[in-house]
Image (cartoon, rainbow, N blue to C red; front, side):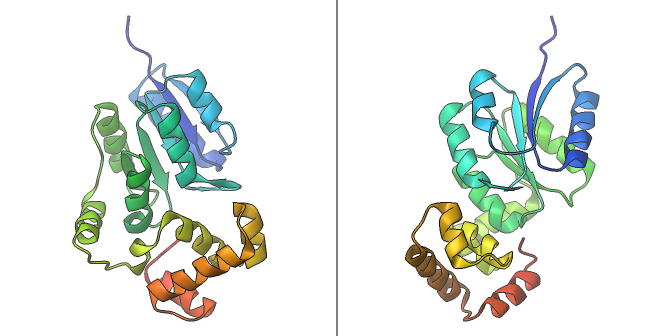
Length: 211
């Protein structure tokens, strides 16, 4: 009997989930696909079913997806995770791999690259495209062509909310931190990036296409 593939698709956009569902059914007819529009039930689904592959966005409302990937690695170490996101590949790709993802594909990539990434992970290998590979080499050599690469996952969480205009007290509440702690992280972010204002932060993010 032919093995029926099981996929977990996590994205808050209906169109993206529909496109992924069509692609997976085309490549793997009869596949079982579980879809999540939020990160809320992802861990429970992964406990209940051994998925062959999980495809996750990184920008999900109310969920810190890097933390979620860490949780998934604890729950089911064997499940390969592919990040499919608009987030900056050379920044978030590095962090996604560090916390347990096995591949990262930008939503600006071609469908052919996405298909290649999916099949690569299903074959038990990592998928790292040339751009991300170069970023990894530079990071390991201490060369940060993109200044955001040097930020920690927590700093990236805070930075993303700052760029969206969220006040420090609101960021503190959403992350369960003291406002003073968030303020300290903000100061470290500014120091690492060599800037002094939120306006400069926004300008720098535009230059490096950080999202």
